[in-house]
Length: 430
Image (tube, rainbow, N blue to C red; front, side, top):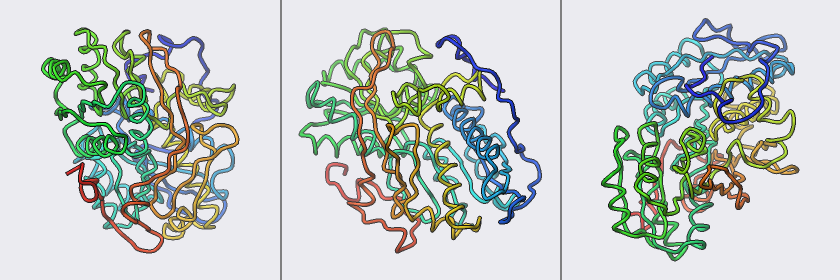
């Protein structure tokens, strides 16, 4: 099993043994088909990046999916049916994602599909998903706005993540914001949300830059930030190349606070990079390995179970938790529907499935909003100090707001396959 080039033992004391039972499943083998009676199988597709530019963030998604599948199978499966899965590596390549998505649907007849890290990947396969009315879980935190009858976008939206951290930073440091973001749809739309949230919090974006995913040199960006002298930076950088920004800003002596919806929770830069690269980074997240909930950190909790199965894994990231709880939400929906037939399972998911996810404090659950196919997440503001120790500063439930309150998306009443953007509704984003 891959250790993603980083040993967890480098960072945290202690270890765990390998799980005693093997995970049921296969990698691209033949499907046994779907049964709705006890003793059969249910077939899931898990397409997550195990290699390529997004492997660092995609590999934990893959591992957490398999953890949930193993746990469910060890507990009797779903309605007595063992989960079988197909998990070929898309290699961070969108053309391969399209090919594998077709294979999952047409050859393996998967009952549900988990696929993709980037928004570009989601949009590359979404036409295939919709052509086949395939039940699809997209688990990455993302820019928001997808109102699609077949897509359950269960990661937090930019409005949820930025809505957790941006108001906190305005209150702590002041109203002047400089935005840096990845130069594709996720980064561009997230930057629009920064402008909307800045306006709502009596702040302003003094400038913004969009960085190509291939770029790893940030000297000019750092100079531009220093010249603009903002109160804080909002960063929506993604991928392995963009990690260089944090090292280079530390080398340049740039000590400005940085808010983010991407760093630390996904690529665990606070563990991979030497201090003080991530000093004074504030992340708005629904999950990090370090969040202080009992479900997450207790003996035998989520973190322990993950490293028992994957002892060489370097980190349990935000998207991994989303993959994990959404497999369990799928299980609950099937059991409620009494069938694996996808229209009935979608209807059950739309009824408002809840789950006691690791991100939520004891006694609380997260809820799937049936009208929008999004989750009302328990959000956290997490900060790294100059030694990269991480602490929780603030937390609370932030509901999905854009699709429900602004757009009026209601997939229980009307089928749609649309992505709405803040530019459609907010003058500040234009």
